[in-house]
Length: 359
Ligand SMILES: C[S@@+](CC[C@H](N)C(=O)[O-])C[C@H]1O[C@@H](n2cnc3c(N)ncnc32)[C@H](O)[C@@H]1O
Image (cartoon, rainbow, N blue to C red; front, side, top):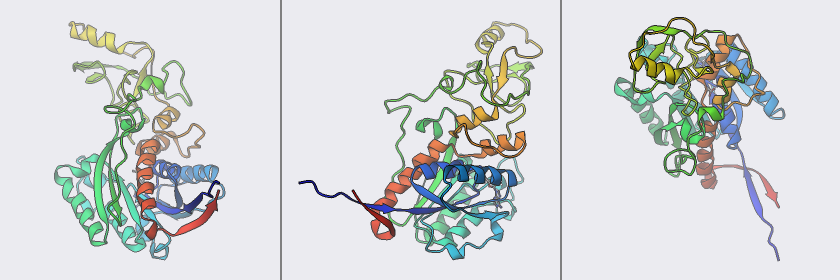
């Protein structure tokens, strides 16, 4: 005689602070977290976020906290939110900036801590750049962790590589996770060393001869004084910050500043290895445009970040590239979100079941 299988359906209402275009939100949603609120101050990102959320989850309600997150109180959400997530901007700590830290208006980490303290969720997930754990920025991370611990969270942090989770990109991100119980386990890589699958090569995602989307017209030109490295794909043989993409390797990190000559490019003319060998052999630098080369379209950049092609991007071209470059790759967000869901599902006593299904 077969027994009824009872499944307790748990729901994890989630708030995404600094939501951007929604890479983190989309990954968390596909991991089973229900994004019910988002804060964002950039109008274009907000429009992108709204339209993608509405097209994906037309039935679900979403509370938007528009404008500066610092102007909103989140106290009314106490007891309603299981997870507070978000990727605060890191410019105040960036080596390239003025390094005014918490005195900088753009500093998002204290705001993230404040919202966690107001909402007191079951767990939180904060994402940032690996640089936050290095050198003079480390005390900022340590201070935030100390505050989370004072709020009663068990805190752990780790730098994860997006390529280990099936993203064909050199992109590392730092995640800080806080839970009420110590059962959070970091997701195991699905690709790369010690797994059965290799990193996804750029050629599996991109084709130089078949552009997808709106062509990017920023040209690629030979550098007057090339800087040679052992690999043809490194160094500066070309003008601009955008690197050539090795079809057998990973796409270089997609930056928020891409759009113009910082956009990585595809070597449609098969020029890169030959030109590198030619220079190594003492050849004189060439001048002019690199034949057959083209930069990634924003649709291709979005694809590399794990967004689906039907995303509707709002704003001008550079704003769209910025939203894409700012995002957490969707598969990476999904991996961390799934690990959090597993940890929370194990702490049944702390989660309110929202429904019951008998199969
Ligand atoms: C690193 S991006 C977040 C990317 C997002 N997590 C994703 O995966 O797509 C940081 C975002 O925070 C927003 N932001 C910066 N300062 C803010 C503030 N004070 N209030 C609200 N949003 C802010 C920026 O406009 C930007 O979209």
